[in-house]
Image (tube, rainbow, N blue to C red; front, side, top):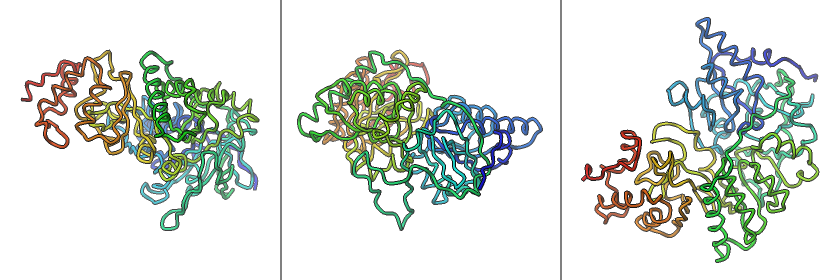
Length: 498
């Protein structure tokens, strides 16, 4: 069957008001770009005529400017799930303009299959190759593309020349069966391959192929600074110590790392620490730091859902595919983030927090409890199944006006039951085997900024001190209330709560 080549505008015209759209990609890597940019123009045109035009968007994770950014400004998004990082989208969500569903990334594909989110009307999939018999070869991310392609009655393929055809082979496409027919996912080491290098679809469903040459809209992260470098070194020191005392096997264990400058600093510190043997990654994203460690031999293999890299770094992989082909694999997000596999492999999870409370509960998503930042992403997928779960963050923010250690988090994404270790630039709080009161002592003494230690100890004096988890409910959010009032948590006056 011959493929139907059309323009991005022609492809966008196939999308109607009220459609549920499924997108390839995971972070800006591998996501649709050309068609969504044209879709924003349609929305703006319809709105200028007084007509309704909004769509719902289902993705693997965040997308890029030409999707979440442009469509948010065009007020073209009614509903969106799951994770996102775009500033304009965030503003729209926090202004109540978009219905945003922040769910665990490992669950996205299966919740679509289960029918929890309604039907998919059309899928837009970025590919480096598509064949007349319906083989779609993805680009820099796995995401939820296999499920979208199977369920969508119509598929638009963005054939992107920025991702060369010789990159074919990086992917391992596998979709588990739904209950009650699901079996174990047969991954027993990070490098195991269990699927195909392509997505097979009925070619009749491919309603158009849009040729593009559009690099991923990659985000640059801030360079390491003394704070993030100290956090990174603290994480490396902690893992090295656990390795020396036999808590971690001598061969070490696969690592998962989140996204951002702290994650890059942690990986750089691990790469420098020669007491830690060369290790593998079983994670949802790979950043630039990991690619450098693969070249140095410090990372032996990288299993991921997405190559969340700068374009120069991604191009360096494409230019050296003979070297990287047996050192990388890209999986769908429900496999890369699957708690079953994470627990089997003994993955050590390393994620960042907005704030932690004195008992080890973690807020990853909301500023002051109500303003969405980005979303939970895959941190929950890895935390609950991890061999050791680590959360890190600077001890303070906004020039000291905000403490990242608080009496009670303003929003709970990861409860104390799932969090093993909290690390800031101040130090390490190992919470394993500790009661709540022991956890509070470890976190305040080791992780809180000196400006806030006495404030947090004074908070505990408001409690009865006898309860299993002492809290003064009348004052638990006192630091957050003070931030809203004066702009500085250090001004909190516990006396008003006595």
